[in-house]
Length: 66
Image 1 (tube, rainbow, N blue to C red):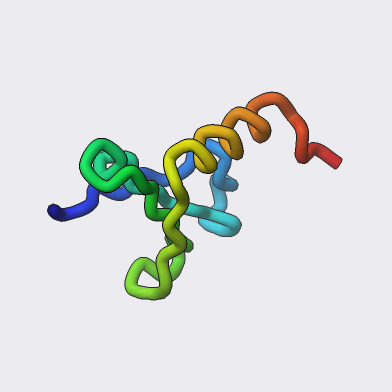
Image 2: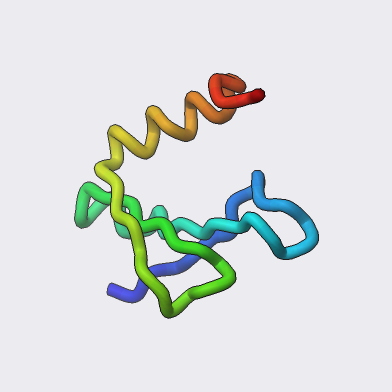
């Protein structure tokens, strides 16, 4: 399966601090791959869907705001 990468809506508009994720893999693999959008051929981190969902929820809730 070819992943469809999506840039995070929380990424900065100037091209820095960007991540991409491939949610289309979750139904078949149970995992969500994440990568640095500036290095699309570099390493990919893979998260269990439950862990990724908890992380995204925490970000949306502002749990990591300084």
